[in-house]
Image 1 (cartoon, rainbow, N blue to C red):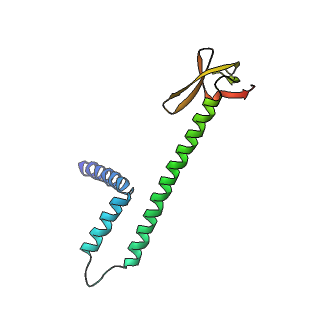
Image 2: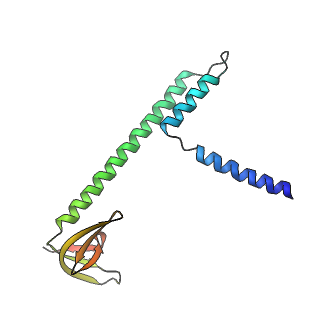
Image 3: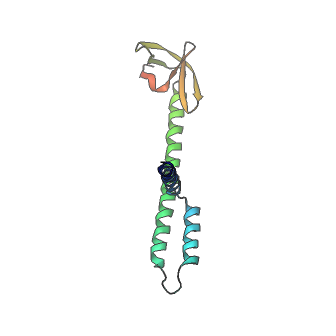
Length: 134
């Protein structure tokens, strides 16, 4: 009985460690590649083209991640600009009860990546705006 318990724990640790090592960044990949090259059998070398192809894939992935981050920043900037442009305009928002509230936006709030508009002292999410009338 204790053997199966140890084996279950060992299985869990193996799954956890395999999950944590399945996500590699560029630096980890390069370290792994160098370690493989250093420790390979000199009489049975591996194809260096395969390593270079993997390195190119990691570089492409890193560039795509960087591009995605920049696009997300651009979209967030556009949301901020849109919210600020509503100051002084008449808008309709739908409150938490599903009722529509109309009023002039007096200011915009930015908290925890949430953008809000303030109407008559009450803050609403920008996504709650259903109509801009002025």
